[in-house]
Length: 344
Image (cartoon, rainbow, N blue to C red; front, top):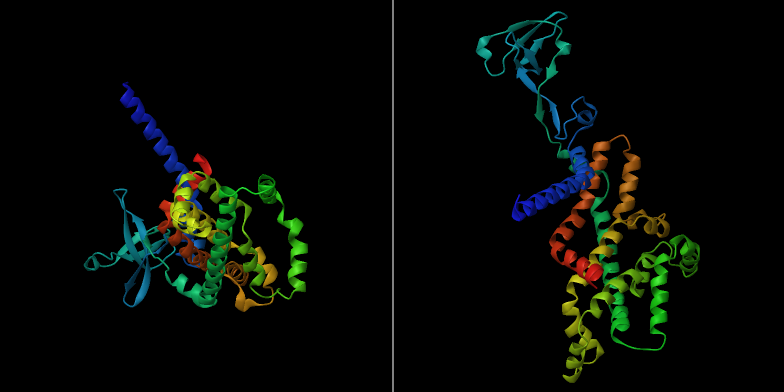
């Protein structure tokens, strides 16, 4: 085997392993989409095909008859519609050839297999949308995600800019303290923070969910700082010579080059805010008109616990917006993750 052939074999093996891992990762999503397109009867039927299918029916003289696979003398099975069910003999007709007349078959018809046909239940999405005020949930969630994402990007960018470009007393110590907050369990600060918000009258409003994100996040600051450290400081000096101040330098020099990392941080936070369940549940309890989609899904799941197909349909609807945003920004997102998290 030549060196070229060996290289091609390695590439093929790696590709197969990657595709397999990706398939395993996407399997729950595919299962959810499949379940959302099935009816309650399809989910409980003996047909375990991932494609939504129902027993095929044939209308004969105004009556819907089951289409069964009937064995023939040659060993083959052909689809026939049963029009008269008997204990030891049953009467069938051929849906493809009605001129052949009625066909009598000896045997127990219950032992025959159904012929299945694709039957996608897109109506599940309509029922799920109408069962709860989905438009209001989307509006609340989008407002929460967009406003907090803006606040996070604004504050984290300014803090990262300060740590990466300016020297001041205690800079390294302050940065260590900032990074140390990452390992601080949220359960430790839960009661004190809630008490503060309760005493100033913010509980029951969006303020406890939005305002804290305008004061930076250690993880986001770290990613942005690492990216900014890779930008030569000579560019700052050139901008300063041209008359740019610190804010103008950030806006005209650093931000255009930090687009991948900014998009990455923005997406990280947007997805987190979109899926955030605990904080809205804690601070918005008793105000259902302000609930985001995460709490709406939980309430819907409790109300329709036996309607699995509707629960899965609503869950798929909730994933549409994050999926579209991720696909649209995938290039910048992956570039930002690689540069911020690996190279720097």
